[in-house]
Picture 1: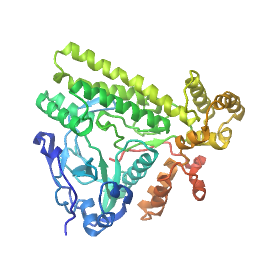
Picture 2: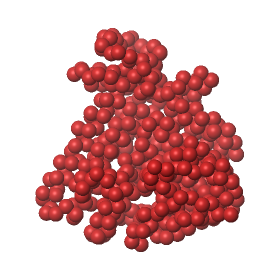
Picture 3: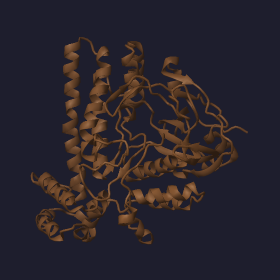
Picture 4: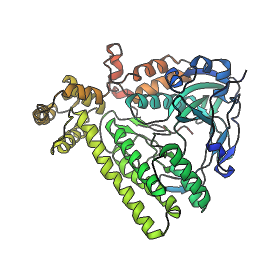
Amino acid sequence: MTLTLPFDNSYARLPDRFFVRQAPVPVAEPGLIAVNDRLAAELGLDASLLATPEGIAAFAGNATPAGAAPLAQAYAGHQFGGWVPQLGDGRAILLGEIVAPGGRRFDLQLKGSGQTPFSRRGDGRAWIGPVIREYIVSEAMAALGVPTTRALAAVTTGETVWRETALPGAVLARVAASHIRVGTFQYFAAREDTEALRLLTDHVIQRHYPGAEGPLALIEAVTAAQARLIAKWMSFGFIHGVMNTDNMAISGETIDYGPCAFMDAYHPGKVFSSIDQFGRYAYGNQPQIAVWNLAQFASCLLPLMGELEPAIEAATTAINRFGVIYQREWLRLFRAKIGLSTEEDGDAKLIEALLTLMAENEADFTRTFRGLVDGTAAAEFADPFAFEVWAEGWQARLAREADPEAVMRSANPAFIPRNHRVEEAIRAAVAGDFAPFHRLNAILAEPYGDQPEAIAYRDAPKPDEIVRRTFCGT
């Protein structure tokens, strides 16, 4: 029996130069790690059917669901600022687009599904670590309220993947509003394929920004979406780690969880990616990198915008709106983190003073902000007195708020996917034990609750547990 899903594949109806039609490469012995029951329900799917042998075979790439139109998407991109004219899905296959109840459309992609013409000497596979990491972190981001791709399922392959050593293979079933990236536009712009750029622009507007009228309005819409997204990242201490243009989704979702991490001790220069040797994608650099990426996006659309000089001026004005939107959203989010629902002129300075103290005292980002709720924040500072001096002004400001505790509780999670806990789940999974993975996912599904039974998961890492470097999955 073949799994049937409610597919309607609009991207597959674009010209063939947008992709390569290819089925996933079958694996030796598929085994289920997890099916995301909550996401399945949102998509109008029966989770119990997804967990059957037919569902597992579909997620592993051993059977193509009815209605699918499997393909590997073409795109290019700037990687750490260096131009690569052809990248594409080198280890992923887009099965098709699921139309959920209410009419929303979602890509279903298999990540780690074998070689494609875009693999560039890679094996096209994923080992279990990146699959576990992306499942945990993307679902945690969704629970925090951050726009993100999601994990519908994860399966083992029964095969060995060779990286620096032999590791068990796995495949992630990823759901996204779409997998169209800045790099998708760059692919066609580099080839001076104006027809493809026009088709892609029309497709994106219809799918993501139906109110946008033309390429300039699309630039404006994508800029606003990215400004709100990056502000969300910053408010949770999240570091994407590899903000290449091929990793920026036009939809405004977080995509491609490679060397990502949530900060423990706060510092704006924090980097976790093992390949980011010069801090290009450090926490504090993320807004300006987003602007750089958006400039590359806008340059792709110039051929569709008429006379060149006025087009450049209009696109530049649109991208410059990023800073205004970002700063407004950042201030709104960080006001809430310190309990403020009203606006006063001195709020930005109050927030920035706290962040400066946190950096100087190596205060834990999440525990400090959550500690503002229950009076434990001072314990996160090497010099608690410095915090107490700041808190005097803060308390005076809070006196003019109606219910600051409720505001802080809704803005500051108690639980995040801490690096050492994610690594703990990965180590166990490599050994065949998925209990830590399931336990961590269950806790992170309710990040704002106190969960007294899970209090140890709120702890910062001990010195010997600190994770200083994270890695891409390739």
